[in-house]
Image (cartoon, rainbow, N blue to C red; front, top):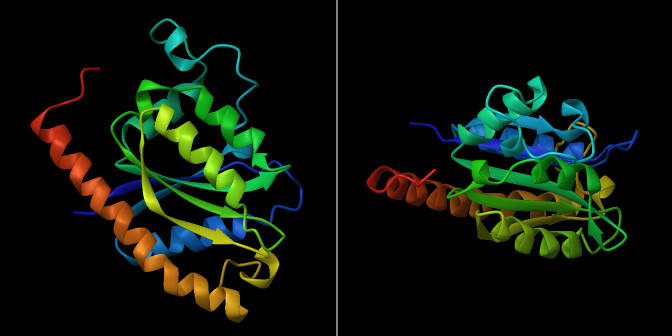
Length: 196
């Protein structure tokens, strides 16, 4: 049985380099047999947070919010693909996640970060770790950091150069850890369903 994984991406920039990493992760998980769905914050286009999904009367949330809530609730786990902006996290992805809370609970999340420089978005990944934990997710210890992204992944998300080789070597551990936590969380939820 395949795992249902959402890959969430948050860049709103016109020349989005991180889409390369999102595609690499999506293809890698699909090659392992997972059911993967891409959630692009820019394409979803939620407004800046005014009211969380749970704050709308039942059936009154905007269509995009209602659809995304169902996708999140139906997922077994998540991968957050994040760039680093001024030592911090992308506002587009943060805005998308903040529209929800209980929908994220009791599922694992993994973080794949990137940057144009050699630090590979490590500071954003660190910030996301605490944020996702606070939102009720178990954040797996394995992470992926890609940088410089243009020298590691082609425009199609294919590994290139030495950085690409290193990424290919690190991906199986990243995916294995996420799978282990997904299976553990599934078993626990089946034994004791969440109280929501």
